[in-house]
Image (tube, rainbow, N blue to C red):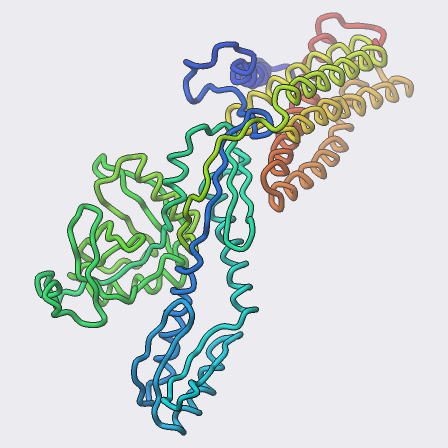
Length: 514
C-alpha cells in the first residue's frame, strides 16, 4: 500500500508551495519593485514588442583575413623560389616571379592550395601572378559567414535558449535581431560589437617598446595596445588560437573576479608545449587586437586550462566569459538600423490565449467531474496546481512566453488528465474483477504508472528534438511542452494519489465513487 509518511507528504506540499510562490508574480498588478529572482513570465516579441537591430557583417574584413591566410600559404609554397612583392588585399594575392619556368611551376602549386582558386598571369610580361577565389567560392564563403554570425549572435544573446530572440540572416551580408521586451538594447549592442577573437602571443623580449617606436622591430613582431593604455611588443603569429577554447567561466582569486578558461585536447597540448619552452617569459592574451593581460609564465601549464586576470568587475568578467564561450564572430558587426518594435498581435493575442485557456480548462474540469465524480473533482484541483507549478517553473528559469508557448500550455492542460484517466479506468477494472477498493486503488496507480511514464517519455523526446533543432518560438514551444509534461506527471500521479489515499484513509468507503 502507498505509505502516507510525514516526510513524503511534506515534500509534496513543499514542491506545490514553491511552484505557487514563483507563480504569484504573474497575477500581481504592481510588479515594479519585485526582486530579480521573483519575476513573472517574460512575454515574447509577438506579445509585448521590443527592439529590432539590423546588423551588417563587414565582409571586407573577412576577405582580408582570408587573403592574408592565402598569402601565408603562397609564401610557404615559394620557399625554394625567388620572388618579389608578395602582398594581399581583399581582392586577392599578388606576387612577382621573373623566372619563366619557376613561374609556371609556382602557378601549378598555387592552384592546389585551396578549392575555387583562379591563378592568372599579367599580360604585359612582367611576371606578376594574381591568385583569387572564383565567384562560387566567394558566395559560399559569404553564406558560411552569415550562418556563423547568426549562430554566434544567438548564443551570445540567449545562451540558455529561454529568451526567444529572433536572429536570422537577411540578404548576403546582414543579420536581423529582434529582442522581446528590450526597449534600450545598448548592452546588447556592446555585446555584439565585440568580435571576441582571442589568441595567445609571446611577448618579444628582444625588442623594447622604445626600439619598436623608432622602427627597430622585426617583421615577425608588432606593437599592440593594452586595455589599460599600455603598449606591448608581441610576436605576430599566435602560439595558441582562441578556436581551441572549449569553456570559460567566472571564478574568484583573492576576492577578485577572474576568467577561467579551458582548451580542447589540441589547444591544451600546444599550451603545455609553449609554457614549458618559455618559462620566465611573458605571454600576451589578446582579445580583438588588444592585450588584456600579459602575465609571466612561472611554470609549465599542462592541465589544459588557465586564468585571465585583470581589473575585471563581476559584470565585465561575466561578459568576457560569455563572449569566449559563444565563440568569435567571423567578422565585425555594424548596427545599420535600430528601432522599437510594437507587439505584432499584442493585447488581442493575450486576451484570445487567456480565453482559449479558460474555455479548455473549464471543459476539462466539467468532463472530469461528470465522468469520475469525486475523483474527477480531485483531479481538477491538481489541474490548478499543475498550472501554478508550470507558471512558477517558467518564471523561475526566465522562459519567454509567446503565442506558441500559450499553445503549449493549452495542450498540456488536456494532456494533464490523461494519466488520471488511465489510472481511474484501471481502478474500475480491478473493482469489477472483485478486488477491494483499497487494493484496486493501489493496483490502479501502480500498474498505470508504467504506461504513463512510457507515453510521457515519448513526448519528452519530441520536445527535446524540437528544442535541439528549432530556434526562437519553436524552442519556446518545446520548453513549455517539456515543463508541462514534467509538472503534469508530478501532479497527476503524486498529488492526485496523495489526495485519493488521504480520502481513503479518512472515510474508509465501501463503494467506489467512480
